[in-house]
Length: 165
Image 1 (cartoon, rainbow, N blue to C red):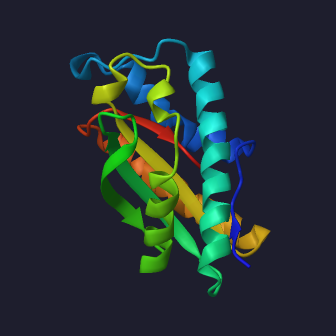
Image 2 (cartoon, rainbow, N blue to C red):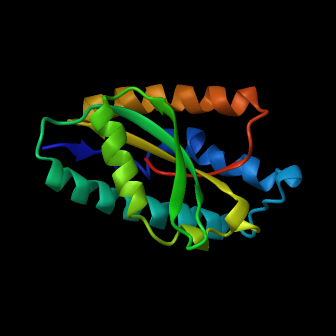
């Protein structure tokens, strides 16, 4: 059975992945501004919980070998507020991990409630870890933290509203 890594409270997560919201609040040229940092943190936690439930549902139907790896997917919202225009920006897992991640995102609702201005113009990024045990989760978290730190350090990319892991 695959275990999706639920690491919201991990200090490393707060230090590395939650920083994804910082470029949004500083992105004056994108016209996207976080309306409330506290509301953003709560939205990220709630959205990550909903994503975890969707991943559990997808996993229940997959019934294959356990997935292992990290997946980062960027997307926008369509006119009905549903995820669309998926772009896999990083994946260390196999194609099934990417497929399952996209399927879970397609079923995710409430993204249009993100506490940012111009949510319809926002780019979202979901960060996901698939692991079989705690040791594997820690290794993959370190990998994903490095990838995300490089993205943030490189700058120049469009501001993103991040959640997951």
